[in-house]
Image 1: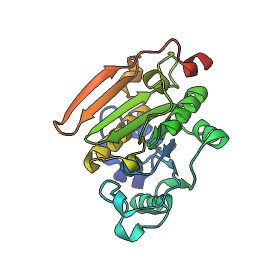
Image 2 (image 1 turned 45 degrees about the vertical axis):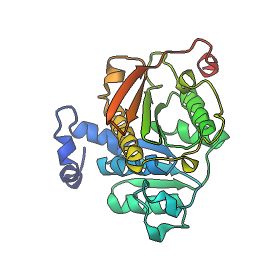
Image 3 (image 1 turned 90 degrees about the vertical axis):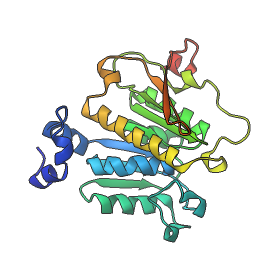
Length: 255
């Protein structure tokens, strides 16, 4: 059960018809891994911390740069030159001392990435390169860990939820993007991007994560296949495409 203080703190979401104290307890005991502490990761983390997700692991090896500030709004001019995870951890713990935040100051890969994913309930892919995204997908599929993937470039954003913990055999990220590299720049840090678009996708990742943890995600309840949600920031419109499982997908075949 939640404490009296926690009940007052989370009252607005506890009072939702499909939430309640038992669901809040699930959030408080959850373990969420966020890979990447840029615009996506910062936006998602502040709402996950606010909602009472009990344990957040944040991973990034970058330092704050002045060019980050228009879209990575948890950082300030005084943070320039400091490790992102140190700044973000301090900010989240000031926001909600009720939760635990574990900072991983390195680029996760290989066995360590697999270990971190295997102990998480849900992974948020907020990374900025395709190679990391494919590695996260492989290990999430392998360990049956739910994956919430987001990306944003220019005026456009995209989001997909892969509930690998569900019993049905579903498509994965490689089914959607069966290639490992993109010619030219493939990093957000090297591409043009509109800050609020990144924030919208990051907040959407937080929302999808909370629904998964609460057990109220329609995609899981109705056993629907994953979808690719495309957001156009210029006209404010969303488009939803179904992701089909690719028969020749190396990740799906292996797992």
